[in-house]
Image (cartoon, rainbow, N blue to C red; front, side, top):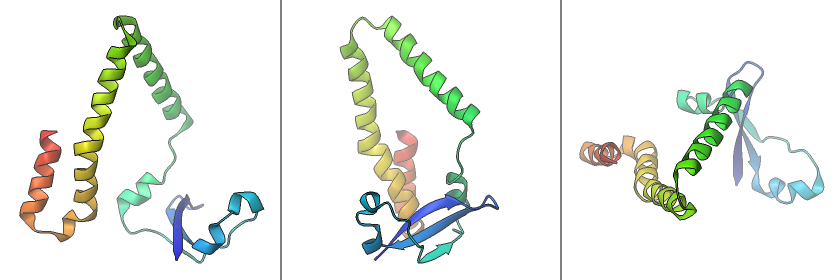
Length: 127
């Protein structure tokens, strides 16, 4: 069965490459290159935009913001357990409620009844 991967093309539009599963096994140990079985441009604009790499400046800014926020948080907390508790509860809530509803809404939602889409959107809106 084919596997797929994305890569930007010279024209800037994202391309999806499909490979045979058998050809991808042990690829790192052999050091060989793969021949794509199929290459196509996805029609969904969201997929095309998500394939773009962030600029080095954006990466630098995001890294700096993350480090500064961690430093500021650590300066005001009296115990590392408080930081771990806040981080753990935030991630658990994200994994338990937000991600499943968001994935369902984007993958299955367009093909289901309207009331189910609205229920998933309400769950995302409330959380």
